[in-house]
Amino acid sequence: MEDEYNSICYELFSDIFFTLFIETKMNSFPLVSVLIPLYNAEQYIEDTIIRLKKQTYPNIEVIIVDDHSTDKSLKIAQKYVSEQVHVYVNPKKGGNSARNYAFLQSRGEYVKFIDADDFCSDNLIESQIERILSEGTQQTVVFSPVRMYYPDGQRLFPPRRIDRDYVPGIELLLDIWRGKGFNCPHCHLMHRSLVDKVKGWNERIIKNQDGEFFARIYAAADKALSVKSAYVVWWQTGNGVSTQMSLKAIESVCETHYIISDLIYSYRNDEETRKICGRVMGAYIFFNYPLVKPLLPQVEAYCKETNTVLFFPKRRSISVLKFLFGWKITAIISNKYLK
Image (cartoon, rainbow, N blue to C red; front, top):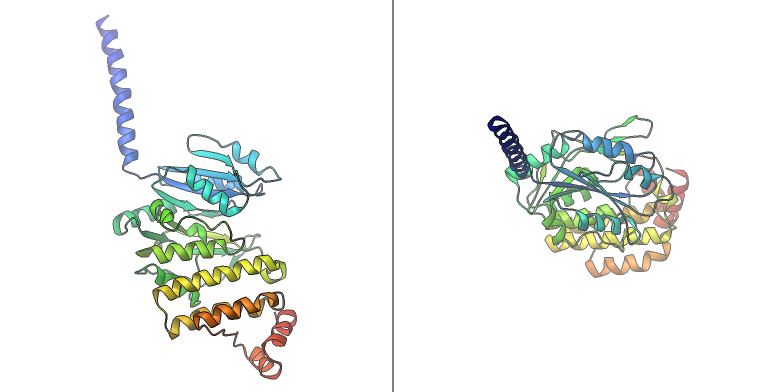
């Protein structure tokens, strides 16, 4: 009888000790929430979930918000519902509202936004958490290199790569707009207080949402730290933006350019930054003309107000045509025949 009692006590205390050990161990790894808006991605979402479950970092939750998919995306995601994977339906509509809703449902101290067709190296979250905990603050964003591929698996070379640290974080935004490289949404990780600070994703924006959101993140960050030991993959579909976007979408991109330029001018307003903003906006206007034509008065009014001069592409063929015919006719010829 005594042996049976001792055996029961041993098992009970072993269970308690093991539970406390696991809780203590997990508490040493802050929870990371991976936030995924889901819309008609039945081809990709399963692989994305499986890859996330293979992450070497031990304390992750996955929050998926379906944005009213019309295919089997939601059913596929729901197969993986568990203590680690949570699936919701967006009470509103739109990718940015889905991201904001995912953030509201999350519990993680740190967050990572990815899309349903994104994937990354198995050590990404572990490597990024190590860097941000050792050298960052709650106002720091970390990022990793981007590898670009076509859907057939062929790698696209060479994306310009940003792989250094920036203090303050807005210096990273300046280098991106200088054309020195680019980042994509799922290469970042940050403390949730930084998302709160910028008030989440702008639900008015329907195009260039990630560019606008992460511009605000960089502007609010005390530093942006590069984590070179991991990577993310960005799929290139090969679809031309200018041929597929509506006027409403182009207007949305122009709005993001105003917002981002204002962030840059708030940090530093000088001849260099005005040239940086003028080149980005000028190239966008040029390569989307004449579709952008109804928006030109708005663009010109912004440029006048901010003393920004639009700079158009300087390729030799474009420069010659522009000298002969002006930039508008040159843009039409270039966009139709010289791509």
